[in-house]
Length: 343
Image (cartoon, rainbow, N blue to C red; front, side):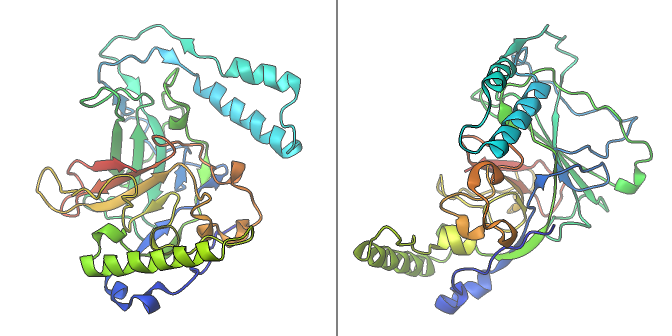
């Protein structure tokens, strides 16, 4: 089933004609639970990885011997989903609660040698044939594969994430790795995605307000303040939240490719390539939810009657404190190191 974004609550270009010059597109991925295979674009699905090529590993020295088993995480989610669908009021049975508690335990494994590394988790793979806003890969590469380490133990603070992006030519893969290595335990449940098929949809998008020309940004802010004042004066139990540029008219929530990054948590930061200084472009946004109370106007038409829990979190991926991860790529050379920001 396709997913269709509802028309925006109003025509923002009719209000602010200057925005037409800043309009862009982004492809909403709409990941939903399914059974993808290695030839599909997916989140958490099997990857088109050559059988004779080493699997990506984290080789940084950090603790990774204590955590939850990925199989336990998947099973726990499956039980909870079935229980709440069966009984929306009370959820799991007493017997299921005992099992859920057991599945939630952390385990300690024997440490492996420092040279062996820790298998990275395959987060997503995206074929250019499926996703119109996916930036070109190096040469004629047509497949982007995204990995991360399942532990927050990286960078200067020792509490950061580690990403690994790979481009490849899909037609060169003859024999696919049948059983990729997996970490025995993970440090954070949110690093373990559920298998999801994608329903790509290209929509219009506009830059974060703080990156628009100053005069235009000020006019948008004044317009929003006026709407908020009107809403306060007519406040009632059935009064709808006023339309806002950030959450209703500019940048959609959820997993998406291309377009503009949101900077709603921090001030906008320049994302220039550290190799060639080029201004980087948004490659991929990994979001903790597909919509929430503040961005419900983006809920697909086909899912209007569905509640946020559990339908707004199909991938079960959590970024930071229920935020979103924006990954940037160099438009001059995709082989240059990517950059990222959590919002």
